[in-house]
Image (cartoon, one colour):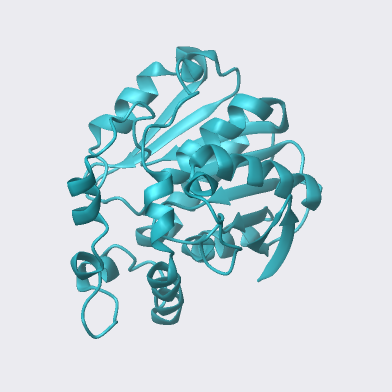
Amino acid sequence: MAFVQAGDVRLEYFEAGSGDRAVVLLHGAASSARIWVAVQRLLAEAGVRSVAISLRGAGASDRGERLEDYAPASYARDLAAAVDTLGLDRFVLVGHSLGTLVTRYYLRDHAERVRAAVLIAGPDPGTVPRTPEQMAARNSPASQRPADGRPAPAWVTHHVGLSEAERETLWADLVANPPERALGQAPPWPGLEGLAARLALPVMVVLGDADEVVAPSTPLRGYLELPAERRYLHVFHGVGHYPPATVPDRLTGVLLRFMEAHAGWQV
């Protein structure tokens, strides 16, 4: 674990591997960069450098003072400052779940820095805001966390690709997420209208057909919005919302094949 100064915030990040072939990994809503630990290990074995960043408020990254600090567009600005400080250029950008929105915002403003992008189990950028009652129910600690503080059994099932120690650390990050993150991250997500059709770089959409968080039809619709000549799709059968933590070996294989074919790399 290390820290990078990204504008006015310090962000936690994890780096693995070395060399000129770089991948930046972004996590989802109630998570942290630690969800990528197994994928990073496998990428390093393949000779690929990876940097997984904990977004503002996640893991050991600085927290924001305003709800707007936790909007995906704000995360993308933090990301831009972080990759500049780290000296990253012409990298592959991979986002999972809410991280796909951060990826989209970054591509909107800095597409020239990215060789190719991967969107894993992403929500619809045009999602309608939830009512206050829906938000309260969704963010209720009692609905997500067992009374003994241990990881919920269903959560463990979705993270079986990580070791027990890795799951424990990631769960601690999840529990420590400030409640303001959930509120600030919520839709609407303005400024992404029509972006997908304008992207001029290879983009792969990845999903699990057993996703219980984001309906598989949602990222499939997003795939169809991308230019036909630059869009790619991979579907994991029987996998839910968390491929980086459920099937990290299979996901890494998909990433490596995509990067070799479309990022101009030999991996």
